[in-house]
Image (cartoon, rainbow, N blue to C red; front, side, top):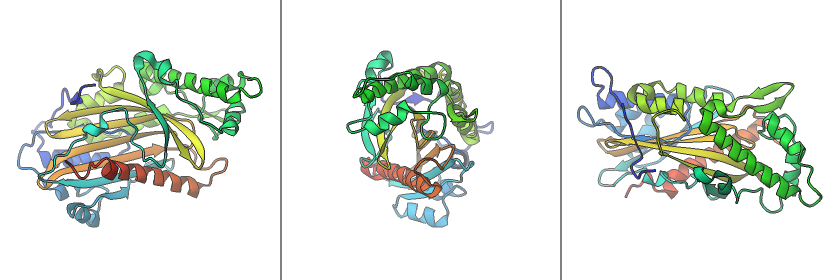
Length: 362
């Protein structure tokens, strides 16, 4: 991937030459009101003097007190209006002051955007050597009980598996003492197959999760719906929006990073698959990250991060949304899962702002 990310080929303003404040402000408001889990950075040449940060944030999820804190140099997070009871969303905004260089370059790599308290293991994916890329993926030491969960998997909400994936685990029947190695090997095969299916068919290639009683959930539909709902983004950046919707048949070429992560949630390992895309034009940057699969607890997610020049410096905002098709399940209550989910999202946004220094600039 190039160091400058994806140029926004075909980016257009509206028919009247959409001015920066109104046009980008509309995009920001639409992003905050929609759900997209990926980081995107874009820049638009202003048609007039730069707007102020308050002008951009006005009318978004950030209220007057939040905007005042942003102008005072604070990082502000606030819940995003949820469009589904299966969804969690949090937004972040901060201001990099004039004289400090702001950049999302640190996001254009295969490093997980995850606080250390959650990160357990990770690895980049080489799409030309996909099977080898998962060689280090495994449940970890002392995970015999977790391996047994996979071997006894059945349709339901305990694990996110398709009917064929459940059947594959049931067919393993490893010798005593070989359960963990057998499950690890099958997990690697499942992850490689899911990446290949997504890269072949896009969101429609994401296998549904078997939930029992003939029911299933469709994480691919959730990702597509969140992208389709970005009206302001589609109007301002039609080519990039089309490329996201039509992936892998869009205009994005060699502009993506892939990696897997293993985190710990309430003591259990959770694996996730991530795709990251980046774009920029002028002084606006956008980075989009899609979490196309999680083995449990969460289903799918998208994050959008953007840098926009304003009178006071550079405005950073980030929207993080994740989906879970049922908030109750074995060992969980609705409140516990929401608490952990919000903590995971808020901690990740804080990691971006503080640990990676995105709000401080250079």
